[in-house]
Amino acid sequence: MIALLLAVDNSWPYVVAAYLAVVGLIAAYATWVIVRGRQVGRQLPPEERRWSK
Image (cartoon, rainbow, N blue to C red; front, side, top):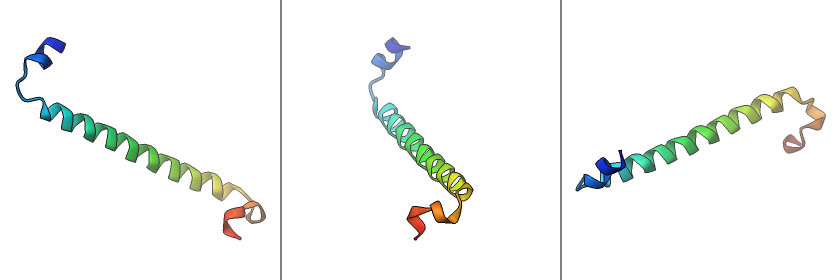
């Protein structure tokens, strides 16, 4: 596999794919954190929601 990558003249597709994978994973994680935070926030009683005063 590494020999195949080293033999390729144009490595930009691999660089672009890696950047897209990283950006996609960060976006998916951020979405998961926001959704999970909203789910947990709904479980708190209104008087304990400090951010909504």
